[in-house]
Length: 540
Image (cartoon, rainbow, N blue to C red; front, side):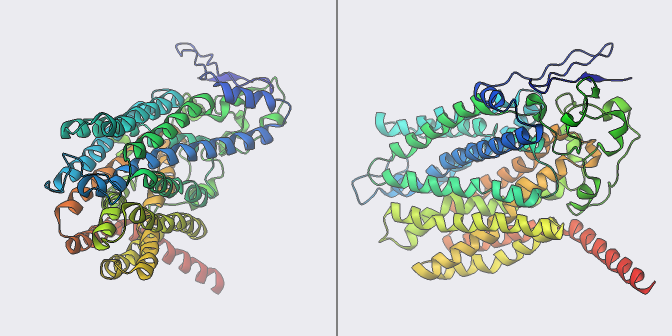
């Protein structure tokens, strides 16, 4: 059967109408206010120029979105030393986390958020594929704003009930789980395959920018009134949520922009031409899946089981727009080669990364008792500065080498001695800062690469027939599994002795490496075959 889309005027957002019997008419979601204003201002611009503008807007907006998410998450780790031990500037230990309590209360606080986030991720990935991503994302952000503020409110209205804090953390975890399965597919709809690692490496610096800003902002009030350490990040998160609701455009087709994985510019075609739903004429269909096939097949994740384009599927399924693509099941997502390995790798790698995120300020304060909580918070940012540089560097290297799994493995190996060295020399200021930077680079670099570039590559694998909507489910599975590891890591950190913690983190990173074994073997085999082919061509 033929599924056709009447081409839209170049001066109006595209509306998709399926003119097939028994197939309902599907309209694209309405444009938000600010996006409509941007579209109106670019009506006279060419499609390429308008696409570039909306790409920049989408990249910046999603970046700011996750900066605000991580900014709010960092606060608990910064406030922990004051909750348990008070401060030198008048803040007293806060029940139920006072000096007479065990660290298990703090561990329960952190773990409740992370377990809720992890389990919520699986449900959010399922829901995100079936709802308007703009509404889904902005609602989650506004709810997270509310729950973050509720934690800080306890300081002002004198709440000391552990159950209250755990309830707030659980609700906040579920709310924040809406973010990743929404943001990753939005980026997948707007950006192509060629330099995914480098682009995603830069974009994923939101993790470290958010952590750094969270440390600085929360540190301003942590020693005097920690309630404001939550209230201000909550306000930033809420304002960003409103901006997302008014601006974000999930699909390029909504504003008449070109799909980044397609070569054809709609403005080069007559306005009366009937397009298929993916934006291609029938004669262009051979290049439809994945845009540049060469670029896509080169961007491997360590598994070449599926290469080339499979045209055995029905023609109408090949021609559907991303807006009309059916959502995939969790089972189908797990069957994509590499999903299980990278999910388990991230479980143990994120265990390490988030252990530093939540536990590091407390560790620095214990190792250097003369420091204030604010100073410990600022020193902990060097771990995030290292991660910021590492995420971009590994993304760039993986693009140049066309290898994700190999770059990830090398970074994990290098991280092992740095963690041990920091355990022994971290109490000294200058050597500690140096080691903290390189520990952050090698620990969180692989985490950044897995959660962005690798997730996106897997989600746009040929086996999914160019269905980038599958990014919601794939990203939810990988990051959700990693978040379970993060929750376990927080419990481990607060239950073990400090020296034992670092040995546990080294063991966790080593296990993460083991889950890349099959993909690494395939990478080496592929490079061996390429070398053999090169030698044969030289000899001939």
